[in-house]
Length: 236
Image 1 (cartoon, one colour):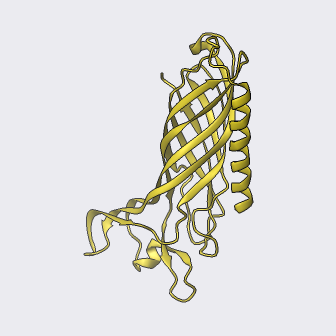
Image 2 (cartoon, helix red, strand yellow):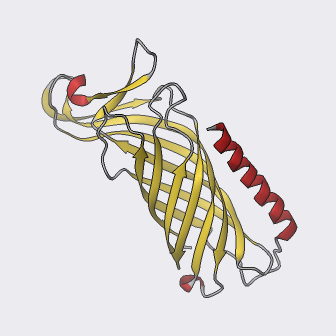
């Protein structure tokens, strides 16, 4: 994990040094207007433990405000900004601390409550403040008819997390529908980082994100991580 973080830091400083030598803000033909961006995606979780059967679609969203700096009179630019991201992991199990090992295990709801229960939501949510860095290529056609492609990385701070259950009342043992939330899940990593890529036309793009960081701290298992695939919309 440390080697991945070092790689991303090197990319950032390389791009920063490159931009100081080559960016010319006098070029008007290649000015960027994609200063607001929304990602709608699903997380494909990797290395999920056998004890948790997760959902195929794990919807998430990113919202970014971006700064686009043209590189001279070329078709390339450097993009960076700040935003908020939200990732979800839907499954039939809850994370619990194993009192013997001190690690995190997933316990199926039917085993936790000793019965089959009817529910429609059971998930982990992680919300973060993110800083993306991208190098972008785009043609010089009209913005709404422009081909674009970019590659970069993203660093984030996970400032909020919780589990959420909505279904039968497992406290009173009735058929009433209740919502249960538990915040500050123990041993979740506070940082996330990975590689991003986008390709598209006009205001629509396909996007992908490969996380190098794991959901839980090292040796606190399980070492899950998401691959995000979806669409990006740049309406302005």
